[in-house]
Amino acid sequence: EPSLETKTYEQLIINQMTRYGFTYKPSGAALLVEFEPQISQREILVRELRDPFYPPTYMYGGFWPGWRNSSFWGLGWQYPLERSYTTSLYNRSLKLNITTAAGKRLFESRAVSEGTSKELSLIMPGLVESVFEGFPGESGKVRTVKIPLQSNETKK
Image (tube, rainbow, N blue to C red; front, side):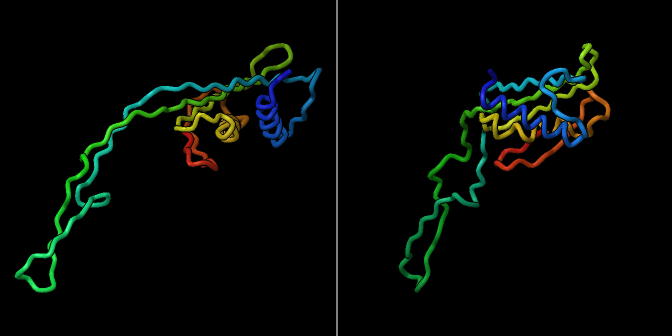
C-alpha cells in the first residue's frame, strides 16, 4: 500500500496525464507510468560580505562642545565585515518514465530542483509540471525550465 505522500504524487501525475488526453486505468492499461522522487542533502559554506556604509552599520554620536546645536556621527565597527555559516542545500528530483505494456520506452524525463527546503511535498508540484513541460516532445533531452513556486524556493 503506497503512503499518502506517494498517492498525492501519483494524483499530480494523473492530473498532468489527463491534461494531455490520457485516462487513468488502474489495471490493464496500454501505458505504464513510473516515477521516482528523490531528495539528497549537502552542507555548504556561505560567506556574506557586508558593506560597512549601509545597514546594519551601527552609528554612535556625541555632542561636541564649541559647536552649537550640532552633533558628530561616525561609523561603529562593532561587527565583522564578513560572516560565514554552514547551511543545508537540498537536491530534489523527479524521474518519470512512460513505457508501453510490452516494455518499450516512449518517454523519459527528469526534473531537478535545488534549494533550502527539505519538504519534497512543497516542491513536487513544480517538479511534476517540469517533467511534463513540452510533453510529448523530445524526451531525455536536457533543458532548463523555470517555474515559480508558492514557497520562497526557486526551481532550476
